[in-house]
Every structure is written in structure tokens, then in C-alpha cells.
Image 1: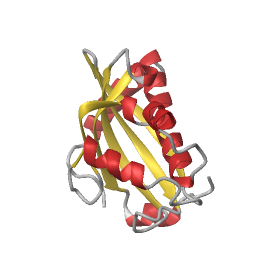
Image 2: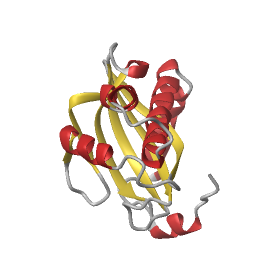
Image 3: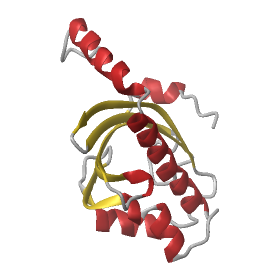
Image 4: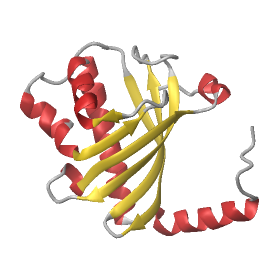
Length: 173
């Protein structure tokens, strides 16, 4: 279904703004942070890393602002404590799990905040239906000298990619 929320002149304006910051140092740091967190998820859920507090703190917990909220595709709000429990409990539960991050675009920088969109593709995701799926995500980060990569996750909102897009893949990762 075409997006009817704006006309094509709006698209040109959005694309001009994105191209202006797409290759910036901030955009590169954001892309690296998104990829690093999702690499941790794969390592944790497949059991490829050691199940200890230091690994979990470095790979996951230190990356988030205490007020972080996730809105997954089902639409239920998840606080950081709830998400942390779910991630901890998933250790080693999905040895075939894979994630690919695509289409990372820095949308806006406002003071020490960064708004970004990206696609998250999952293969063999036991906790999702369908197990092979794709999500469009919007994330908000803030500059944080203590967080790995200098950015703390504040908020993520995910929604499913259209069924026909998910069905077509690709899942070659």
C-alpha cells in the first residue's frame, strides 16, 4: 500500500536532509552502535559468548539509558528492567538465530539527541512469528560518555515490514 501521509515534494525534503548527515561522524557512530548491540543479541541468544555479568554488562546493560522503552511490533511497552530480564533468560536458547541490520539512516540531530531509522532482519527467531522476519525501527539516542560508542539508547519503536517484503527476504545472512 502506498504511503498517503505526504506527497512526493515531502520525500525530496526528507531525502535532502538525510543525505546532508548520512556520512557524518555521528551517522557512522550510530550505525556502529546499532550493529554492535545486535551482534551481542546474536552471540547471547546463540550461546556464543560466556554467560557472565561482565559480558552482559558490556554487551547489553551499559548501552541503555535507565528510562529506556522498547515498543516491539506487538505494541506492548517494555521497560528496561523487563527487557533486561527477557534478554537474560534467552541466553543460549536459539543456536540458529541470526540478525542483519540494513538501511540505517540518521534522520535528525537535535542537541545531544539523534533520531535514526533502520531495518532489522531476523532469521530463525524462535520468539517471533514469523521466525524469519523484518522490522522497521525508529530509535532515539543521546550522547553519553559512559556508554559504549558514546551513545545511550533512549527509545526504540519497531513495526513489522509489509508481509510481501518479509516473504521476499532476503534471508541470506
